[in-house]
Image (tube, rainbow, N blue to C red; front, side):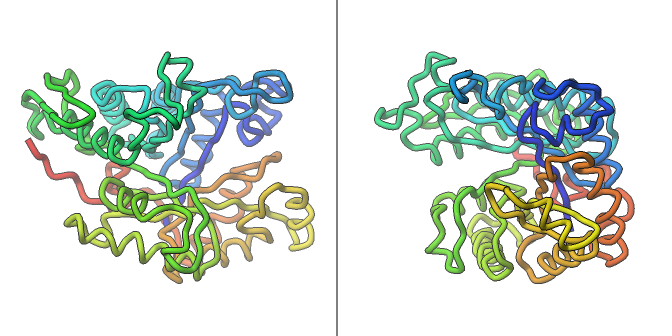
Length: 369
């Protein structure tokens, strides 16, 4: 089983719930809060931590400071800082492809991979937010033609161009010119950053829509699944029933062969939430009032059993967790659930492998110079 943790926002309650940070309620978290969360995830032997990106403040009750954006740092910069206070935890950032160039992104993630010793991951987002576009003087309204009109094609080409940059240095440290000539990007030059420890940072992709028991009934498109199978090392999927999870898991992995990839070249992680209690009743009480249903609600024993059964049934290869927004947060899961998963033989008891790719069981990219 693979485990990762998602940190949606700077003032997310999970980040600032621990009063030991000394932060007044309502203020964005400082670096110490992020560092503590990262250390907790590493103590729990998690594969990686994912920081989200938000490029624009939004109206929230007229204040213009939505809780999902206010105070949020630029994620790659934050992860470079976290690399200095962690040693094995993977560091993933969600960065969109609309308001950045392939060379700039490739250079930034290669730098993170070097500074972290091979722990960088890029969560690819291709959605073009019209409000964020205003910050860049870039009109990405849906009714306009142009780069945002064919997001899958443009994003796929963006990833291909970034890979050209990553492959512009040989594995033995010789710099060579890169060139990508395509419909959306026409770039050529030489990168200043040598090939990084992982060759390419781990590439993550999300399937965001509702999953039914039949692949053609899902609201995400076949094109979205093909995109994930073609470019991703890890795909994040909505958490649903084990039966629906098995169908989606098989469907996405069944597409890999069409791109010359093996079954284990892609890991499927279910985006899951949890609420723990000393009793089932206590856990249900803590979970009451949530806008969305929690994925796992119960005692540490029942949650560990449910997660183990979900993975063993073939519904996923692991989980991207969003902790309960209360005191304890991720600590509670690490202290009470991880040991039970280890006792069941479902989760590692120590880190192995030198890089995030190795710990995820992913192949090292073949250099295509």
